[in-house]
Image (cartoon, rainbow, N blue to C red):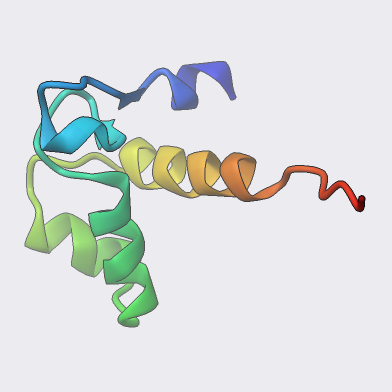
Length: 74
């Protein structure tokens, strides 16, 4: 899993510091938006030929890790 997460990069000088795929200007949120729009992995890879299948897995894993955090009740 660490190898997948290593595909996600954050650079304050790129895309406003938003997480991107392998230093490209393709944001994790771009990939998630395409999945949410109903595109399959194959369709996303055809639409964005610079991406690899593991990039899609990395985006999903990154999002899952970001949203899986404890909620503290005061």
